[in-house]
Length: 278
Image 1 (cartoon, one colour):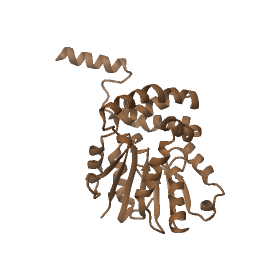
Image 2 (cartoon, rainbow, N blue to C red):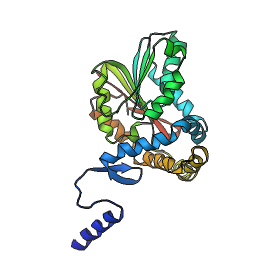
Image 3 (cartoon, one colour):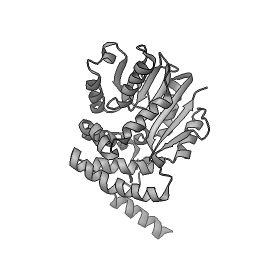
Image 4 (cartoon, helix red, strand yellow):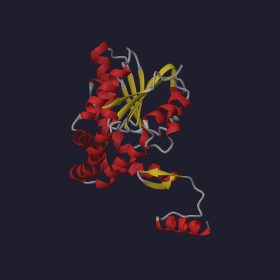
């Protein structure tokens, strides 16, 4: 036992971790890092890729992410006058789809979306996207830099709906994110999350792993000149809870889920999770 303990300490030291430290650790992709460092490291990833983020999404998924996001908003089916909080909203993809849906389906110009993202560079891309659009001129969209784990500027029970797409797996404490979503939603409000998940077909899973670890980082290098950031993004998907595990986190935070609480997209490459605040 003593020999094993010494070996463990040696391994930690080799990895650059102080074995005497009592600081909590979390995952950053496949690496273990101090919790206090993860937010900065994730921030650097998204600052690196902000200007190419949308282009890379198209390249990585052959445009399929657009279909997933369209499905996501159709499942939300916001009624007229909905006030949406879009967290980790980045470049504004979900916010724009939400407002387009309200405009095209309901001819509704009273719906509002407040976009929050922890990364200033991503928020700026979103701000430029909406600049001088009809939605901007009608003051239907607002943006701010903020932390999904502590939405200090959002009053309790102030939102009709909460969305987070391809962002929650990058957060240090997923449970705190969902708890904050519960806090800011009105009774009857809806939480919806679109996230990469775990493939439910063994044959497809093998191909997906090969594509993820070999092709996506190479595309990151080719298009965004950043292989490492996309290596992290691929690894972060594998570290995220399974569909059933995440559905239980949502229920543990107080939400009511219908059925299993999620819908798989493309064999589970992505999944839509949903919960209601009763």
